[in-house]
Figure 1 (cartoon, helix red, strand yellow):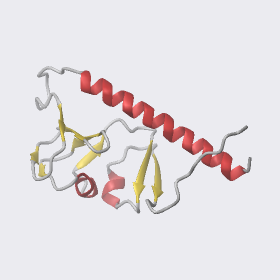
Figure 2 (tube, one colour):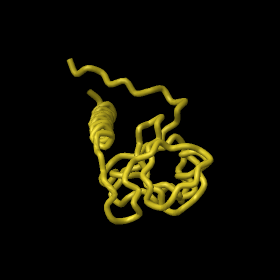
Figure 3 (tube, rainbow, N blue to C red):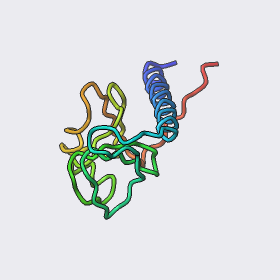
Length: 135
């Protein structure tokens, strides 16, 4: 196996493991029944909706990707991509993770990503990587 194949296989394996962890976390979060504790009282995760005013610290899930975000400041939503680009949403639970962007991320998007996060930039028009069996 060529060195490039080995690197891409390792990256593919890491991304696959991270996706499994994200799915597991999303499943567990969906099962939680969180009571009204301290803080803002936003005790549940809401499905993201465009043209909605969200308060700071509201947890939102993008129903297309099952990715959870935290609202940074009160604002009226546009789209998940626009809201992330404007710095209104922050990814939840991505410390020491890999985050993929379809195109060059904006500075605002980079500012809300936690430290120690690997940013992968890809193009949807690229040929998808298909790992080869090591047999």
